[in-house]
Length: 189
Image (cartoon, rainbow, N blue to C red; front, side, top):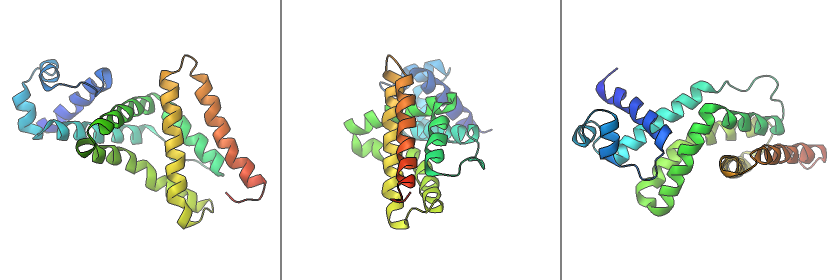
């Protein structure tokens, strides 16, 4: 493993523990037993350092999530599967990072918007393709994928901040039920 990849691993571990909001290079460098100048040497900028750490977080999450199995036969099953992926420890860590990054993007959109998209993008396309495979029209699949992701994002935030996280789990289950009821009523997937 090269030095930059090794540092990216350690940066991610630091960010998972301390978050992205208020991340400063000097304390980060001190925790990694290096200097802020060396971090900039290896990554070029704080944004690129964060981007590399986020890409690594996405890879870790992808490695921790099994592909949907044969038991995922409906859109409701797919939503429940995605929710369970977000509920596993790697999913919770990635969600925290995604939410931190989203807050940064609201404050400095030009600087952070692309990073938010890079973290979310790997979820959108497979979900969109899965929706098409379940019979959703191609023309509707992107909007529905975005709706599902945005809803799960909101519920994940609620789970992380609520006094009673089980309410978010119940809401996710109710959200999945909407797809079952829609399919049963014959109004489509």
